[in-house]
Structure formats: C-alpha cells, structure tokens
Image (cartoon, rainbow, N blue to C red; front, side, top):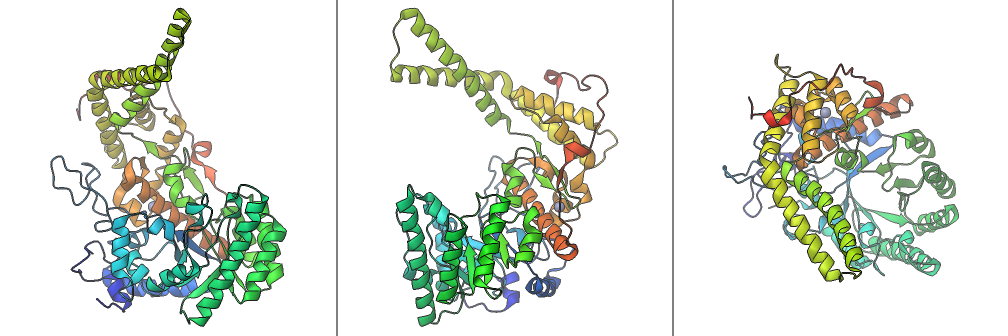
Length: 527
Ligand SMILES: [Zn+2]
C-alpha cells in the first residue's frame, strides 16, 4: 500500500492487514469530513507562523469515540457481559476528535512506542514508505512528528539501549520529520563520574549522529539532545552541538527544575548559540513561562501535563478557557473501592492483633506466619464487605450516575447541587472513599462542560466531568489540551499571562441545613 495524498491519511480506505475502521476524518460531527483537509491547511499556515510551538508527547492516549457511557461498553462489545476493549483499531487520537489539532506537532518516544508487541507489529507494517509514523498517528505526512529515544525509560541502565546507527535507521524507516540524538540523562547517574560519563556520551552520540546523518543524506531534520547539571554544563554542551552543525537543539533534563532555573538555562544557551539556532524545551510547557519563552526565542516545547492532570491530579482535573480549574467528580467502581477500603482496615487490625499476640505469648511470630495471618484477614474482610455491601453499593453507584445525568439535562426533577453532593458523599463514604464536597459543588454549580463548545464536551456532556475509566478521563484530558492550546494562542497574541484559579475558591455553594437525601440503605435502583 502506497499512500501519499493528505486526503488519504485523513480518510483512508480499509487495509487488508490492519484494521483501519476508526481511521477517518474528524469526530467533530459539526464539521463535514470533506471540510477537514481545508481546515487543517488553514491551521497549518497559522501553526507555521507561530512564535512558540507546542508539541504533545504521545503516550498512546486514545479513546473509543463510540463508547457507550451508560452501559460502560466499548464499541466492539458483543453485548451481555462483554464490555469490549480499547485498541488502536477502534479508538482515535485527540486530534481526530477535533476539526483541527490541539498542538503544532507530536513528540514520539521510542520507549513508549515500542512497549507493546501489537503496536510494534502495526508500526513494522507501516514502515519503509507505507505511511510510517504519520499513518500510525493518523496525521497528514507533513504534520510535524518529532522522535526521541525516551531517555526516561532507560535512565537506570548503564548505557542507552540503542546505537546511533540503529536510531538513524529507525527515524528514517518510520518517516519522522525531526529526530533527536541518543542521550543519557545525567541526573540518573549515581555519582559525579557517572554524570560526566553520561554527559560525554550524549555529546559523542550527537557528533556521530550528525556526521552520519549528513554523510548518508537523510531527509529529516536532526536535533541534538543537550544535557547538563548546571548552567555552565548546559551552555557548554549547547555550544558544542551548534558547532557540530546542528540548527535545532533539544534541551532535556529540565523537568525537575524550577521555572527560574529553566529560564536561566535557556537564556544563557540562547546567548551562547546566537539567534539562528532553534531551541526545543523538552517536557516543559508551563503557563508562567510562555512570555519568557517568546522573549528568549524558544522555538518549541512539549508537555503532557494538561492532558494527564485530568486523571493524575487530586483536585485539578478540568481546565477552562476562563482560567479556572475544577475537580472531576469521582464515581468509583464499587468493587475496587470496597476491596481497597476493606484491605486497608483489615491490615491495620491484623497488625494490631499480631502485636497483641506477641505481647501476650512473649514470642514473636515468623515473617511467614505474619504474612499468612495478614492475607487471611484481608481475604475474610473483602469477602465480608462484598457480601454485606456490594449490592447496596451498586444501587447507590447507579443512583449517582442517574442523578448526575438528570442534573446535566436540567431535568425538572433533578436534585439541587447540595443534594447531589450529599448523594455523592454518601456513596463515597459507604465504599470507603473521601469526598471533595466543595470541589464537586463548585464543578456542578459552574457546569463548565456545558459552557465548553469543544466537540468532546458537546458529545459527552457530564461524562467528561466524571472521574472514572479511560474513556471519561482521557476525554477530559483532550479537552484540557485544547484549552491549554487556546490559552497559549491567546497569550502569544496579547502578551497577557494566564493565571489559573481553583473553582472551589471562587464558586461558592450555599449549604442550608442538614443532609437532604434519605439514608442510603433505602435507595432503590432508578426509583
Ligand atoms: Zn471541552
């Protein structure tokens, strides 16, 4: 299969070896698929002129566009007890959800890409002129895709697992637009000698990478990975790489540094290499840096922070263009919650009992005896929790979903915000979880998913505000990424910095009197 036109990447035909069913244009139903290529072209023009470009690291975050939220089933489910599953075949990337991408490019780490066998096979089939990485990511062939080796993945190893020759071939075979040289993170070293070794190795690799890239006439743009542990070491490495001939440097290892340190390093590098060398800040894209990045002349940056906060942050899961962040509403599955809370209580109790036993007999139990005792206690407690609580928990859980959806639809019988928060609180308490009452109240009161006109929020409604499972959590991450990209453009245009506030700090909800809902044991499914 030989594909070349942009249209074929967006609306490709089914292939015999790999199932491309989900490989279509935009999932934004408001945009006809025939319009998508034109919109992309328009976006591409704007992106090319951008002073500061934003790349998203690919972490295989895909969602099933036809996921059934009410039944919690994937589109490939066979009904009854089969929930189906997610995969590259039936899921889509964030940029497929919108009529234009929410980033100027994608950064793909080799470590992440080659983790699963299935993915490796798909990539192999697409390699060597069959669409390559662009086909895999379902983007047009001229869409910027940057590759690196994913040094975080092998930070603990003595040497990087890839040779320079191997990586040169890898970027070429998969059709990357940019390829970063093979680096080894200096902060992963055990001592100063190790640090120096990694630093020198990274520079040696950069030299070999560039020489071979030139000699072999590879068509993609080579980028040097720049490492360091303080301003001087960074500047020295950057200078050496610029002297080798690179005109695009990827500054790495900055993720753990403060904003001030990052800006200082980048500023000094810029002074040292002059205005004509492009700089990419690896893994750092923060609102409070945007204006400074523009000032320094940083060409591009990447970060998955705004995507991943949707599910990694405790309170800041949903971001809005009004510069407010809200907590997603947890409706955890009852089984796992009951199991975890039963385990925790049983372990504490069992440990106390062991101590009592030991004190009483004056003999200490062997490790094996202790372990057996703990395991038995945990098993019994989980069994008991399931017997006594699972059925009620399930009813309560379903009631939460039912009432949240009724609230979303502004059903005349829907609960008020305080009533709804009470309901959520009672369920979470019953299954042993903590409820962030004020945060949920702010989220429900403000209804930011309703105010957002992005295709995710438009289609998923309140599901995108609920913390549960990949299909809700990643959708929220896609929305956040979109918001970040929009706010970035706004800052680039106006120069006004973005300051995000917490919803719970500004949206106040009045609680009158005691709990409104009846005790949980009287709940009936969808009464
Ligand atoms: Zn949205």
